[in-house]
Image (cartoon, rainbow, N blue to C red; front, side, top):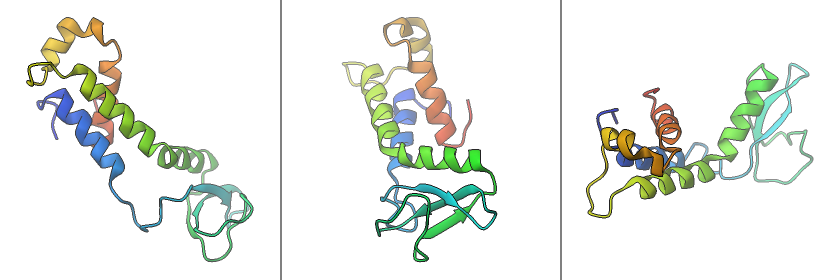
Amino acid sequence: MTATQAPTKQLRAAAEALRAPLLPAYLTVPVRVVQGDSERMDTLSWCETQHPDDEDCGACEVVETLHSELAGLIAALLTAREPLAALMDAMANEIHTQGGNPRTEEELAKYGYMVPTWPTSLAAARAILGGGQ
């Protein structure tokens, strides 16, 4: 996906990427930040078993980041995948023309006052797709 493609296609591709299954397949359960081997709250944990939020049960999948802030950010972003995908879809629908032809970035720049958040949404979509701004 490149910046030359229609913004609606980029937004929809980002939504699709956010909805792509992650391994392990059961990463549909909430990701928690737990205390890792470093004795800091810097480890991501997900498990199908319910147990206290700050512990893993030994069967949990864990990834130690060694940085508490990074672990919190990753957990938040993983939890926000579906809401972010829904926002990308909604913005794509909002900026798509009635005639069926996707608006170009030039058209959006000219008439973007009707949808003032399109540049931010498109920048986020490009970041999700690995293309930056």
